[in-house]
Amino acid sequence: MTPSGATVGVFGGSGFYRFLEDVDQLEVETPFGPPSDRVAVGSLEGIRVAFIPRHGAHHTLPPAAINYRANLWAMKELGVTRVIAPSAAGSLQARVQPGDFVVPDQFVDRTWGRADTYYAEGPKVAHVSVADPYCPQLRKLAAAAAAERGVRVHGRGTVVVIQGPRFSTRAESRWFSSMGWEVVNMTQYPEVVLARELELCYVNLSLITDYDVGLEGQPGIRPVTVAEVERFFASNNDRVRALIVGLIPTLPAERACPCGTAMQGAVIGG
Image (cartoon, rainbow, N blue to C red):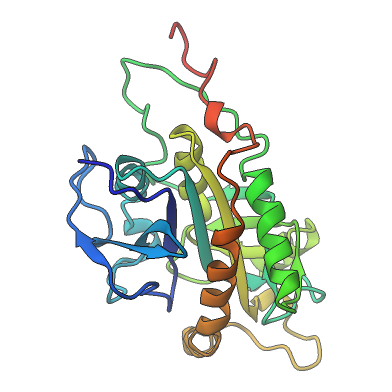
């Protein structure tokens, strides 16, 4: 694959299936199979941007069926070095309200069976560090871009990633909340780790669409439903897009973060 000139990649989450107009739709082959959909490549203020709808253009892929390895590999093949990954998410804390954005700095993985590394079968053996899985430079810029637009944003937080497609039980959600974790989501793992293995900068923008079931019992808070998530995200799509459109031009040419050297020393005997 010839690099497309794109240096920024954007993944679209639930309800976010298109980003830029006047794009080239590219079919990208990867060693791990096809990505979720064709890659749309266009320009934003002179910056080439690649976009993949994470669940497919018609939302045909549930969280556990997404080919995360192919999606990230396609971005890397096209020349992308930074990935912006918005997603719908539920709140686990009363202070994190629907309509807020959370820019996580940590995750907790509760998934199983997902292809979550490029080094699963050898002959290279690698153990990448994910002590700090999200790009610190992108996180800071994303939080600033949100604040400048009057968006209520939490500049850090922990996202617990559940397998799906079901939502949490009351007991699970109470456990997550009691641990102090802020956000629950189904797609952050292994996406963020695969980006780290490819030495890409990665930031998640969690749009809070609902309170999770563990907050039920507090006044005015009801359990999450698919209909509510879809309605809320659709009504906030413009806010998500505006935040990303505002963020991309602020990205400096040079990456002042450790993401680009994440695999140094990670390969045993390499």
